[in-house]
Amino acid sequence: QEYDMGLSLPLVYIIAPLFLSAQVVPDANVTTTSDMSETQRLRECLELVETDPEAAHELAATWTYMEGNRRIARECRAASMIALGHYEDGALELEALANAPDGGSIDDRVGYLARAGGAWLEVGYPEEAIVAFTNALRLNQYADDILAYRGLAHLQLEEYEQAETDLDEAIRRQPGDFYAWLYRAQVRFWQLRMDEAMQDIAQARTLDPLNTQALLWRGHIREAQRLLAEGRSLDEMPF
Image (cartoon, rainbow, N blue to C red; front, top):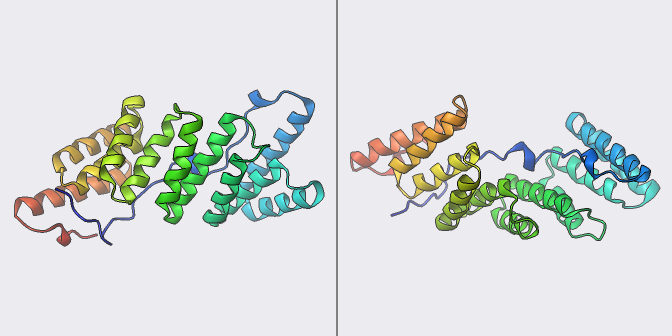
């Protein structure tokens, strides 16, 4: 038995910073003096995104004007757009970069697609997020962090079986992934598997005891258990 989320789904989804924040290019990827210069410039721009995304966006525009639509300009522009709340534009830019001839290494492209998927989730387009995450996993099937967020996208679409498959695998690979436990608890909640949902929340809380979302969901599950025990509807939940 399952319960239709309808419009009562609590908006408590958390997208890990990995998928929404700018990622600094590691020095290990630098092979030439030219690469070092490009890497340093990109690092400076991505650091600027964290403090002044409008200035970072202007910097990317300047690079594009002066030097053409180079990879560092596109990545800086995408990161600044996401930071400014223009999630769709940023996601499209990252997806284009992942598919571009100059999109970098496999790891670079996986990172672009992961961040694009996070942006799609943030703006409420789980179908697009699943496409981005799936493409990332095709490039690197061992990108374990991505599985939990594809599971979340399936959850948002009420595709519980697919969600649980991804989240089971995410937990198997990384038992310390707080978000995988949190999301699987929600999958089980909406399937009315309250005891299992509570077990997952308990595990999540061992990983992050003070996390407010885990505490909130523990309260939701307890209230749902009470209502169901009394033969009442979850429509009475205070969502």
